Image 1: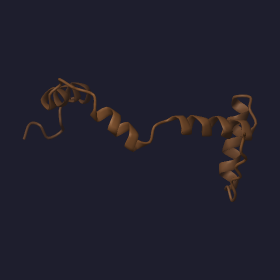
Image 2: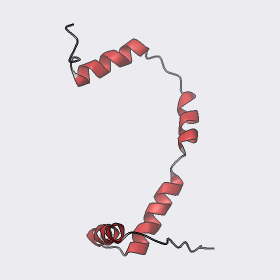
Image 3: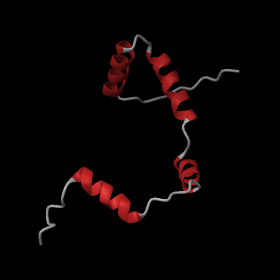
Length: 81
């Protein structure tokens, strides 16, 4: 059975942003918030996500990760010291 949620004391600028976002996608504010609440509820919590990712075996070493990051980021500013 569907439930009703009421949010009180939303700042005017926050509500205006919600109205703007909802209108951009052709929704009402309640429809937009219903969609966002469903999306939020479907995502794992940080604790669940960390537990899930810790179980995955990895054969990538710490040095390989740092090397790949260095390739993307470029040299450190103080690397020549």
